[in-house]
Length: 477
Image 1 (cartoon, rainbow, N blue to C red):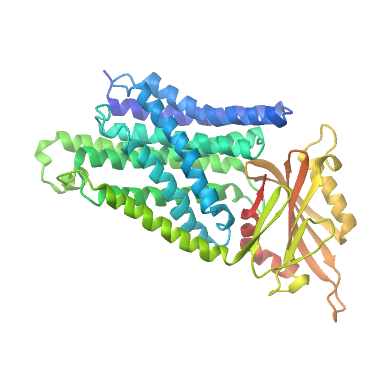
Image 2: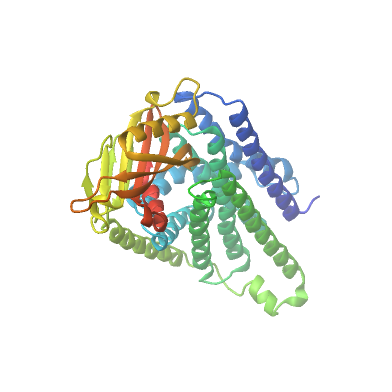
């Protein structure tokens, strides 16, 4: 018989490698075969991508865990319950009740707090509840490592449903980028679910005391929020406004690998400490084995969740009071409340910073055009971007294209055009304003959607944070 911990550990490493190979294979097919999918076929392909990492993960556990395998119905049940609660509670609370996507882009501090208090806390409480109120008291939860197995299964269920909702809500995704996003979500939530499972296992077998589970939930929520925010921004670490989605995949592999490695090491030390009776009463035993006398009271965990969600509501209300939301066609934009709405040639919506520069200063606009006007038959997004640049050249005085950069917008391939132009001078000035701008393009169905951001050239470089906030607040269907 093989050691149960060793089997689980080997399975996880194989699963992480398998997910990475899956992403590489899909990216290769997408880049070289360039399948032309649209409509229902694109959505169906995206759903398959969303399910594959979870299927691989669960299959590997069944195949490798021969020492004392968890009953198949328990693992599958935890997986599907995690998916069901993500659909019924998790995503509605995060995206519809708190509408966190509309206010996380205001500034970094708000983004971190919101990601922890809303995304992290809601997600981790659901993963905690899935294990705590189902298999926790069963005879099949009989080793500490089982907490990691069940927690990872719950996290995978949550990730799978989140990815399916994302694919359906966006009418499909680019296959290569979509596979990367699916892998990042699956790896991160599987490892974070394992964190919750670890704390539950310690609570069951080591009686860690009344603050252990609340502390575990807080730690898991903080990790969830910080990791989620980090993974969403890592692909943008390339030069300028460029991005590389492989950065996010690499980071997810490293983070998931590190979390599982730490958890397995802790379990190993626990097993050794528990077997070494001579260490009873030692400082190591006090830390590893615990000193509690009974199971922890549940009300403390619920209190932590309630306090966190109330704090998030207060924060969200304050932030949303500083912003406005504009909707046009397939686009929604959250922008500062101090900005004034205006009109702009070809724009469905436009606004400018009333307090800094006025109508001749920083500005943002949204445009929606038929994709057929820009994308020739068998053409690529680069072709559409080039044709978009030609149109902007006709619209703007002394237009000068600086760069066209590939990017990713909410799981879809996109393009960014950096350019400069002259803005007619304000009244009383003899000199036109030299403007720097970036147009972000993404395809949605038969429409080409664009977010334009512009500012005076001497201020543009210092406004990266503002641009990031506006881009984070731009939602496309």
